[in-house]
Amino acid sequence: MFNYSLDNKRYHTLNYHYKTLYGKKTFKVSLNGNFSCPNKINGNGCIFCSRLGSGDFAGNKEKDLITQFNEVKTIMEKKWPDSYYIGYFQANTNTYAPLSELKEKYETILNLPNVVGLNIATRSDAISSDCYDYLEELSKRTNLIVELGLQSIHEKTLKFINRGHDLKNFENAVKELQKRNIEVVVHIINGLPGETKDDMLETVKYLNNLNIDGIKIHMLHIIKDTDLADYYETNKFHILTKEEYIDIVINQLELLNPKIVIHRITGDPKKEDLIEPNWLLKKFCVLNDIDKEMVRRNTYQGAKTKR
Image (tube, rainbow, N blue to C red):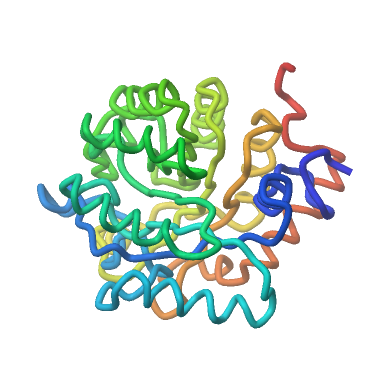
């Protein structure tokens, strides 16, 4: 069995990470802090971003944070009554606000019973120096993870998706967070228009060399009412098949240090909003097929890394 898994997975699962770190079942509770995004303030945002700012499964921003949190907690407690929780500020850019507002929202969740950590999703170009200082102080009191969207290392792709920052900006943010001993999780997207399999593997090689703590691997999916949907309507670019995606993901896992935690390995769109690909709706089939193919190939995370 792979060293960093409690089941048949051949990669470093989040479940294993939480069980090892906390000793019992731990959940992330997705929250909507009603933050904005600098990329939307200055333009249309990333071409793939939904109306909810990549927070389709976060809480309802019309409700206060404690209400959002308790709604999820009530459901989880029915199956796992003795659990820990991590507040996950997911929707939009969760460091894009005055420091006083950030403190008020983060501390509100952190002070709730059985909350053992915070995950803060943000952009590399939206963390002020004061915010870095506060995050460093916060990381000494709780298990703090900062999630940075990158999507691709290729400048041509970053411009096409209207990312709003370059690779150097991202790299500087990672180094600043690591200098302060703050854990970093990075988001990437497979299947972006114009990218080859080699391009996607290069992105993972780069991140592996940055010594990040975790990664979220997404499959590009086209959502209604986005700039990407408009582009796809007139430019029917190739969308990865399930088999192509599985092959690429396995190759990426082989390139990653086994200590890097895999926080996500596929997308999770809402059926009513999805245009393509439909195979992504069967999330557990995709996960199971990745497992089976890794067994068939007799491979595992880190199989092609130098250790």
